[in-house]
Amino acid sequence: MSLLLWPASLAIGIVLGMFGAGGGMITVPALIYLANMPVKQAIAVSLWVVAIVSFSALVQQKVWKQLQIRLLLTFGITGMAGSIAGSLFTRYLSEQFQLGLFALLIFLVTLWLSKVKLTNRVSVFRFIPASITGFLIGFLTGILGVGGGFLLVPALIYLGIGHFPTAVAHSLVLIICNAIAGGITYINTTEVPLDTALIVSAIAVVGSVIGNHFLKTLAGSQLQKIFSMMLVMIGGLMLWRAFTS
Image (cartoon, rainbow, N blue to C red; front, side, top):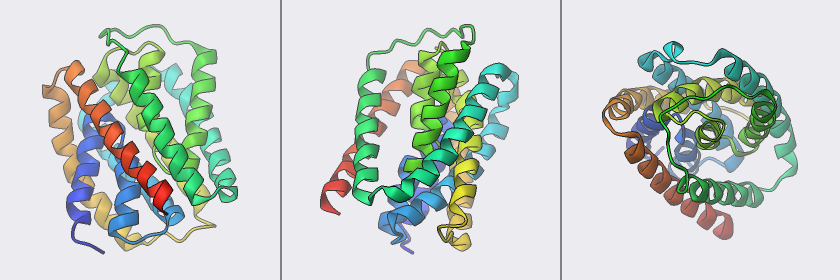
């Protein structure tokens, strides 16, 4: 295991603490390149790491003070169902396809997010759009091995949560549900090295404390721009991997 995995793990926590998203997008490439894991094993480990670090960030941010329970239940239930379906479906996909899909989704989300204006308001919950969006995001979570946050935060903004920190808070709860559901599904098909998973998780928890500080001090528009730049960088890396693997 490369020593570079340590600062990469710290970055995972910082990103999750700031954005309630993106931890898996760093975890999967870090495990592939720095821990020499095959893609499917990296995905399985990533799901557990993201779940642990998201729980840590959730506690730090005291997110229960700002949650819409109906939205969480709808996203959580449909998202977990989608995550299980996606994890089962992934056995029929090639690694190249998984990575290519990963990159394409990131670029599409980045393009949409760059045109969205934050309102700093939270609108009324809508059941049908939330149900459909929750299942689709959960399905992609199972396929891509990420907590779904890079899709959840934009989706929550689209559904009416225009206040970035509030979207992050909801995202953290949903990431935990989706990641655990996907991680359980991988147990019978993919070996998870506990030592690596625990080391990465412990360092990432420290990073989440730093990320939580930035979330509280930076403006929503600044967080939105940094989030978009992060997506472009990760998308480019995974696209390169898809064409060279």
